[in-house]
Each structure stands twice: as C-alpha cells, then as structure tokens.
Amino acid sequence: MTPFPREDYRLLRPYDPGRIPAPVDLSDNTNLWGAHPAALEVVRKAPPEALSRYPSVYASALKEAVAGKFGITAENVVTGCGSDDLLDSVFRAATLPPGRMSFPSPSFSMVKIFARMNGLESSPVDWQKAEVDPGRLLLDEPDLVYICRPNNPTGLSLNSDWLLGLLALGGSDGPLVILDEAYADFSQDSFLQQAPSWDRLLVLRTFSKLYGLAGLRVGYAVGPEALVREVEKSRGPYKVGQVSERAAAAALEDHSGWALSKRDEALENRDRLARELGKRGLRPLPSEANFLLIPTEPAGAVEVNNALRDRGVSGRPFRGLPGIGDALRVTIGPWHMMQRFLDALDELFETPQSRNPGS
Image 1 (cartoon, one colour):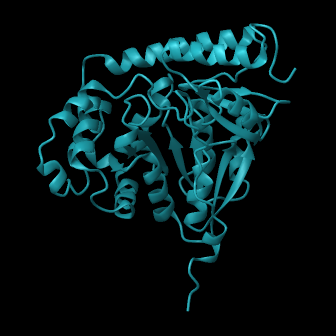
Image 2: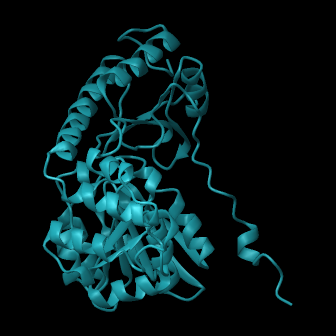
Image 3: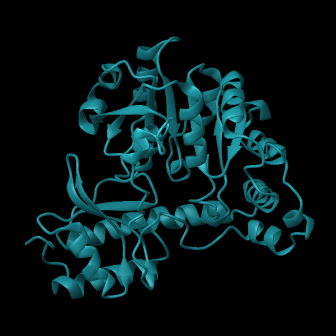
C-alpha cells in the first residue's frame, strides 16, 4: 500500500504569508486604494443565479476580454483561480517526476512549494549571476525555468533582451519558460503580447495587484495555443466563479482611467518613499513594482516588523534573502499610509532623517 501522504509531501510546510494584522497593513502587495469600481459594480448587481449555478467551464468571457485587451486570440489565454493556481497547473502539465525547475534567487516563495508538490526538484541560481549570464539557469538541464519579472520580493527586473537571450539559449527543445508578470502593470516592460509566438513560453498575470481583486482570486496565462490547451486540461473546469469572471472582465474593459491613475500614484509614492528612506540612511532596492524591499541588517527584519506592528504598521519581513540578508518589504499605497510608516520608523529609531535601523 502506498503511504499517505506521499513521502515528498511530508517535507512540505503550509504556506505562511508572514502577515501580522495592523491598522496600516503594508504586507501583501495588493491595491491599497481598494477594488476597481467597475468590478465593485458587478459584485453589487450580481444576480442570485451567479451564486446558485455553476460558472462558465473555462471562463470564456474573460478569455475574450483578455484577448481584446492585448490584441491576441482567446485560444492563447487560459484562466485560473489566481496566477498561482495556474503556476501549479503548469507544473503538473509540464513534466513527470522527477523533474527539475531552475529560477533566479531570491524569488516568489511559493514557486518552490508548487515544484515540490508536483515532484520537481528546485535549482536556485544566484540572481546577480543569472543576470550576468542567463545560461546559468540551464546548467542543471531543467525541465522548467521560472522568472518573476518584476521580481517578488526584490522589485528588480530582468529586461526583455535578457529574456530573449534565455529563450535563444534554450532553443526549440529547451525548458519551458514560465514568466510571472504579476507586477508587470507597474513596469514599462512586458512580454505578454509576444508570448503566443514562442513555443516554450507562458506568461502569467493576475487581477490581485493593480485591479484590486485579490479576494476574488482571478488570474490568467498567455502562450501558444498548444501549450495553453494542455495547461487548461491540467487546470480543470469551473475554476473561476461567475461573479469573479464578470468583475475581472469589467475591470479589464473599463475605460475610466481608474487603473492607470492608481498605477501612476503608486509609482509616484514609491519613488517618494524611496527618497524619504534614503534621508533616514536606509537603502531600498530599486523597484519596478508596487513595493519596496528595505534591507534591515544588522537589525533583524522580524524584530523590526514586530516593533513597527506595536506602532500600528506592518510590512512583510524576510530572513536571510540570498545576497541581501534580512529585509522588510513594504507595499506602496496612498501617501497617508506611507507617512504612517515613516512616522513609525522615526518613532522606533528616534532618528528623524538620521540613523539606520542597524546603527
């Protein structure tokens, strides 16, 4: 009899988002201005049958909305219960255990969990080394390469020329490249529209960030039709509820400019916060996303976050990130929230514009 659970599952721990409740919660990189108004209107007007009946099998209306937005075909789109659901589906469809996945490190913490759940070994490659030479990601002959761009938790991004170099090195029989563009709405560099032209590339997107729909759990992926078809089989039917599908499509098709205005405000506040942190002796990493990663060493990130929480503010602490050390990730939101964060820092270290947490 096969033991339950599988041996490789025994080594897994449930995902811990590291979230500590606080009046000003800057921990999860969601839209702190709230949900898209067009989506809220759909939720308010949802008919009873949107709850009592099964949704569209594969969210065809949302696929059409994505296709129309980006000038591709619906056959190039697969939807899911958030982009992480699609990441899990890709891993399940792409290779048989034992397989291997490589990725620049540090990166999205769930990627290693999904890999292990699907019987894949992970081969992390130092971010700086991979940035200089994308071929390092291919040295262990992986079945899949995962790239988060812009990267979570650092905010750094590998440009399109780098990505083209990786795809060229892999060739037509190389590994499947999964490009996670969860934060691409905040960047000037996306590869989504080119994805259908590459046989071994899939681009993931989410409605959880810019569009403010994290609670509805909606994501999508774009790639060549043959690849999308296999991921859709792996993903299974009825993953996106009727209300979620309609709300996401309404947000995507809205022409009010709400999403763009919130993006612009987030970018302005991000850069302003980086300058204010610099005045205080802190050096956040350059970011192309809606967050900043702030190294805290020699102070511990968890201890810093706990102290901030006592002052009504929380971020997301990370211990021992490769090449960085302990760091605190802070979501960008309306400026009054950023000011609360700065005030808490100043109170914590009693150093308005003077000392580093570790000094």
